[in-house]
Amino acid sequence: MSEWPSIEAIERERRRLSRRRRRVRTLTALAGTIAALALALTLVSALAVPLFRVSGDDMSPALKDGDVAAVLKGMPDGTGDICAFYAEGAVSFVRVIARAGSWVNVDGDGYVFVDGQVIDEPYASLSAAGDVAYPCQVPENMLFVLCDNRDAARDSRYADFGFVSEDAVIGRVIACFHPPF
Image 1: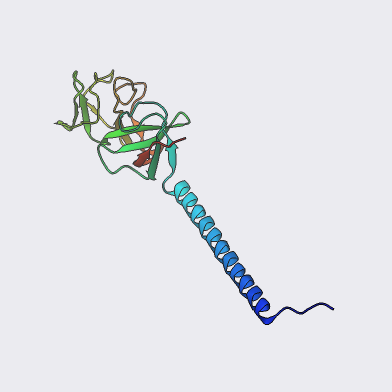
Image 2: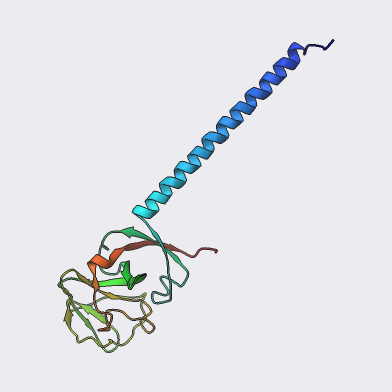
């Protein structure tokens, strides 16, 4: 005849099963929290702060080829902001120099003047003025933009690039990092 388990053995098994249930509940709650956080981050990234990979060195040293830029959707606040915009089916990055109504001049040494005032650009390499006739006034709903690496970039200094429509702007860059992959 089989022997019944002792009360101590039954109590040990009850405690073991209770601990197991608590571990399963904890792991299930943790998995749910991680899934909710991942979903929230995905929604925020897609709707308010999308991430874009930088292609090329037009904005070097601020943004380098392969960097990932976090872009806050909306119009950049002011002069000097780096913004992302759609151009020919791709995302490009430039620095906002002047908004609609402002007068822009780039002299032969590469110094930029907005409404008669030279702007301090420690981030930019100075370069020739391009082929636009200066001074020029920024049209309504447009931006005058320049790249930081001006010797290697096409920007609003060139007639074939021109002004950037405010409708093409995705937003301003708020963070940038170089991913390990």
